[in-house]
Image: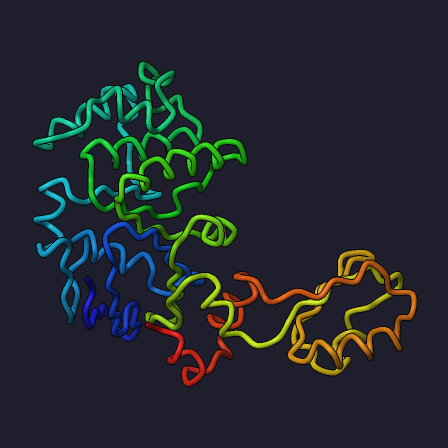
Length: 300
């Protein structure tokens, strides 16, 4: 539980009054643009940074107590690995620090890196290093797993395998908090999404609840000869993206936009109108132009 959490660096309010309660068994995605305060919040949750104000409790204990007890496992994107140690040695070393760790072989299996056990860490690819960090986070058999950009540097197949492993972990009722820039991962795997902007929580709820906060729809069509300057002046349009003949238009009034679009571009084809997805909600709720009065009602 985070209550009234604040952390300032000079005039920069990295975290500016965050209140957050995460229930056991939830999978929560922490989202926000660079500088939103996600990493600082995670650091305070793990006891790596001391808050200027507010409190952090994890299963009724302080972060340091929870980490020492093995209740929290953390996978940090910048977590250092010993170059000359093998993967197996690295995971075994961390396991030795905990009272009731998983067997090293089990942590390696769950992370999908059994075949890398004898390889030195300086011989690993970026994606493989991430999987080793995952094994290090898992080996304490934690009740809460905190992941910072867990699939960074992984290819598509590795990302799929990683989330398959994560699904197995959460099936046992464990709690996961992950920060990511891959919004499709949050949309697919998170029970709950927390959006941060300028050190504050601006939206908190399921993907459906968060996307419902943003009015409007997205129109997609193939329009030969369409230009961004012409599309932007259509009624209701807020954002436009043109890639060759493919056009994507965010609109506050999709009916008015569509009528004007067909009048201006009668050659338009393959038209789709869809609700704003998580990406659209993210851009709207975390942009510099977002009004605090609109987003305050979005939080739980």
